[in-house]
Figure 1 (cartoon, rainbow, N blue to C red):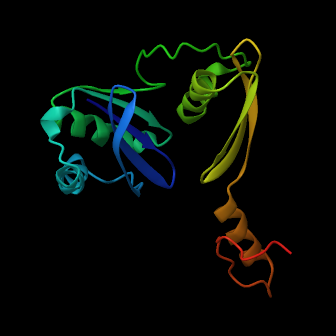
Figure 2: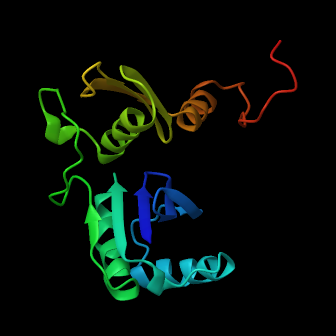
Figure 3: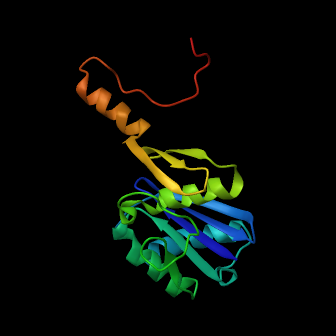
Length: 181
């Protein structure tokens, strides 16, 4: 089985795959100081509830935009899953996508992985919109290459900034409205 880890600025998502099928997934707050042991204790019970064992994991792949978390994610893989963690953008991992921008080394692993997924599961050209701490818009051209994108403030950061900058605007929480108008 494969354990994938997506370490984002706000949340870290762990997902277990058997072939192409997702078996389970879990989310925790990203804390760069979280140790490998803390990850393991947290994951152990979640694995049990999904009837999984740490020994089931044979490979670990990581998409991380939080370099300070990478060391302990590597130690988690080594100490508890008995394998190496392969970190996209830090290890020599071939993602099978051309990155057609002036500074390809500056494209985040999250944006590369999203682009590969769009090319794999949908038709190109395409646009990926990822709502996270930042909202990213990325373009995959007709040849299937990543050709650029933009980063905007994420929804929650925008709401916090509005609240901080507008004296009479209350804190607004994101929820599905009963009606739009």
